Image (cartoon, rainbow, N blue to C red; front, side, top):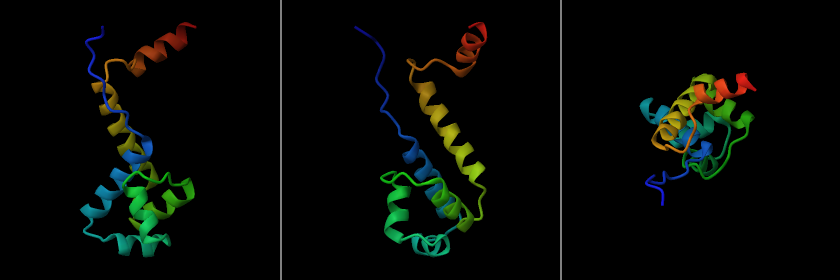
Amino acid sequence: MSSLTPVKQVLVRELIGESLREARTDQGRTLREVSKAARVSLGYLSEVERGQKEASSELLASICSALDLPLSVVLNVTSEKMAAVERLDARVTPLPHVRAMAQAA
């Protein structure tokens, strides 16, 4: 019997949506304002922010442009959030260990 506490699986689309929502609210902007600037429907943008829809790279670029935010920043923030989740999950092999294993092969 394992003593590990299972960590809820987090999807990348949920973390991307969370990052986009944080950027939008930090700017004090509404969904309506950003959806209009990004040329995407308000409902779809809402679903992306809630992690219910997986946005294409083109759509992400459009949303980031509307937020005046580089896509690389959103992806880096998302990556940091995913790394934090993985640190909580002892079942995930740390990246430096994976790199060492790959170099040894």
